[in-house]
Length: 373
Image (tube, rainbow, N blue to C red; front, side, top):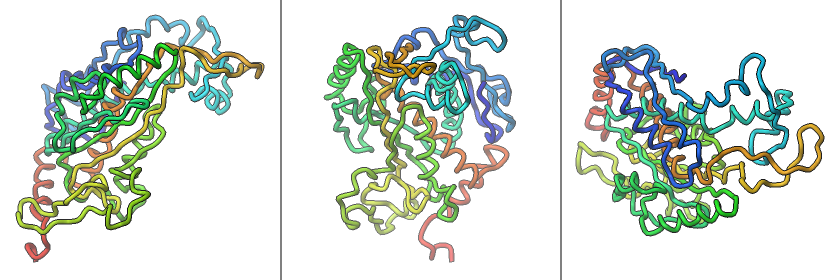
């Protein structure tokens, strides 16, 4: 069950829009057998009437088709129980068992599964629909898989339709085959491979977030949201990873003179990724994240048994070989949730028309101060 609160009334929302994004999450080269079982669809239960939101919480139900095979093993009461005690390095198995005193690793591994990201994408789709009402659109693409790195065009020149058609969700068609070969090599070795993904939000207004409150800085909230995705180990806002060897004059995004009152505060570059001082700067919001190779290996690593501490081979559970392509869709969802929350904090009304009045009134004041003195 997915519950989304804070959406104003009169936003048009249908199940097909959400299903589109859920379908994008299930695609991607390197996916495993689970995606052949599930056909994710979010059934709207509450908060929408005749296609429009009501302002009340939106409830959505996503069915797990594989649940029928696990009803006894995962029964809330008595049931068949085959314990898992062979710990997987890199997963939640050991810390979860120690934290909660479990004698069965399955109690940790099921809740820590990336299956829960289906709910995130459904919730994120609602946030994206809200943001689209105000001209904000989100995209993502894969920058690298394993040792293969893309050389994508500038952000404004990316063909997003082509990215959606790419099996590896990459904007550089010249390296797509190499990326797939990298995944194939990992699969044949019984191994896994990670990658780097970039998420871009276009049309974001200046001023979302805060320079006053440490916990409301927009880049901090986006970083936390992206780091919360299963297997993500690093996040960069804009070119953050590349700035260590640059001087300040080489990194800052120079502000250009205002020659068009309808398009003030343009920048020559966007190295900072659309944020300054914990707030959005009006340029595209850009975040990159690293998703590590998946911890479950078909050719398991050496490990230990939870009961005895003796050496064993780690447990194998059905899994993907590479999660980089679908991770971008999850990253879009998480960024959308953060942006929608910040947007409604600044402009929120009880309905879409009221929110639009607030937003348009603010936008009319964004320009050189002498215009409003």
